[in-house]
Length: 101
Image 1 (cartoon, one colour):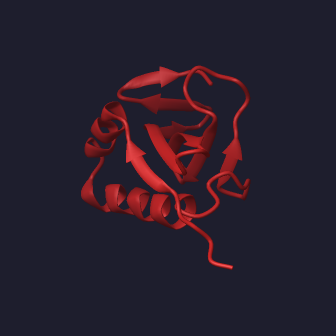
Image 2 (tube, rainbow, N blue to C red):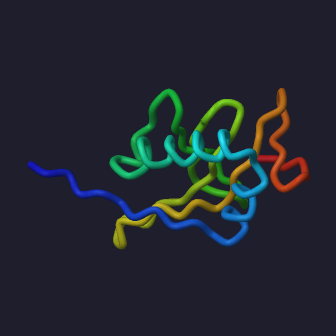
């Protein structure tokens, strides 16, 4: 059985967040998005988890120390990257602001 893949789409803010990181870090984040979200983005793993209800996103991908927040549209088989930030101890910083999840 061949497993079908999900399309990855970036929101404008997420794309802007990604551009703020250094090239090495940006490539690391993109590589992890490709490896972990194209197939089975809704399967919880050590680096992917379903979040409690919050206004940001349903899912989080951990790429230490970065966090990629995303939602999944099963009918369109699309993963929408909504925000990318950095975790600093217990804080998540996105676009220079601390976000409470």
